[in-house]
Image (cartoon, rainbow, N blue to C red; front, side):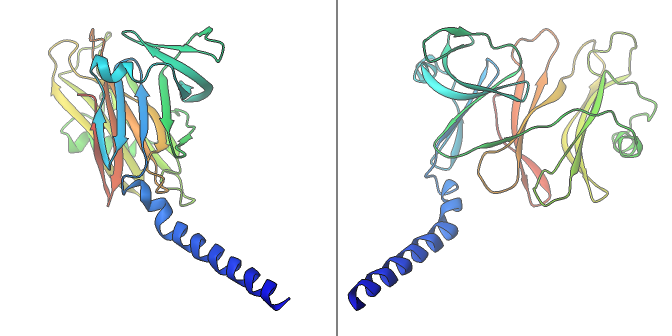
Length: 259
């Protein structure tokens, strides 16, 4: 009986030991390069994370290796399901019986050997323009500027129980008015502080500039703080700019982009 109790105590000690090891090193192991993920954004962007580094996959050989692999697929930031993908100057989806499935919307596909959380969000109208006016003034732009797109997204970005506001304003590709300068400005407001994310201001040269939009908020490194994908489209240019942003000590930094 005493021998059995000794075994039970030993098992408990080992269980607690391995649990402590996981809590100390398990979540941080992603940053140590033990995990791998592939993220597909639209038809022109494929990012791979491996050995603590992000890289673009763009060659025909590297893309072919991704064919007939199963991905978690999101369309317009909504979960669509798990499907096989095939690349041929664009991505095509198939179910388990190899039946074609239509991908109608902005594509985000993820394959990883760890959980990557994708968070829902929705665009809201900007009801208080005070922060927008301050950012415009800081860029020497008129607070009476007209926009071709303007909205905010409210989301608990760092999962601390308090939601932050992400603002996006742009006058790119104006049809009904002709501004002196073309601008696209993206910033976050938290605790009454403004954190710049994306700033593009240039002289109007007729349909220049880049109109941004949020593609996804997701936690790619499992650290409890969301990264996000900000995409940007240029007039009459098929390939959009995709940027993966990370929040680091009060600043937003681009982990990787497709250009």
